[in-house]
Image (tube, rainbow, N blue to C red; front, top):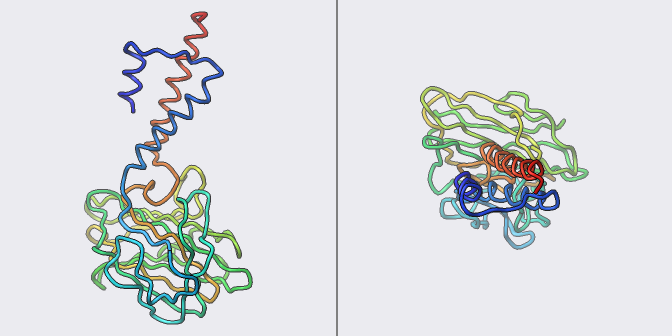
Length: 275
C-alpha cells in the first residue's frame, strides 16, 4: 500500500484533498490496510452450522479438522440457535453448541498447527446462559501427553485464568466472552502465550501471558468442558489476528495511520498554497 500511495502522489496522478473529501479518503486508506491483512487464510473453523438440537457426536462440519465428528467425553451437548456474537469477532455463522449437562467434548485438528514459521492464533466465543452456573474450560493439547497444554478456564465466579495465571473476569451471565490466544512465533527456548479477553477495536495489551516450555507449540486437539447452560461458538485458527478476529494487526494500524498522515499532509499543503 505504501508503494501505491507513493506512486499516486509522486507521479502524474493528483487529487484535491479538500476537507469535504478527507473522510472518504481516510476510509479508503483504512479499508486498504485492513484488506491487506484479511488476505491471510484461516486454518480451521467451526461455527456449529448444524440442525437445531442435533447431538454433538454427529457434528463433523467446519474445516481444518480431522475427519469424523466431535467426541462426546461426558455429559450432553447439542446445536442451539442463535449464533454467539461479539463486536470484535468475525461475523458468525450457524448456531452455537449448548451444554445440557456438565460434560466435555474433544476434536482433533486435521494436522497439528504450530508456531514455528509464524505466530499461531486461536479464538472462540463462550457464554453463560441466564440461570446457569458459570464454569467452562478450553484446553489446547499437543500431540504428546508429555508436552504442556494451554488451558483457558472460567470458574463459577467468572474469574478467568490462562494456565492458572489471572486474566480478568467474564463479561457476566448472559453476555458473550470473546477469547483470543496468541502463540508467539517460536525462536528457541520457551513459547510465549498471550490471552486477550473481550478485546475492543484495538487489541491492546494481553490479559495474561505465560511461558510454555518446549519446542514450537503444536495445537493438535481442542477440548471443551462446560457446566449445564454454557454455550461455545466460532472456533477459529489462523496465523494472523485477522484470521481469527475483526481486530486488525498492529502493523495494519500503523500502515493505515501512515496513509492517513499522507492524506492530511497533502490537504495542509493544498490549503497553504491557496489552491
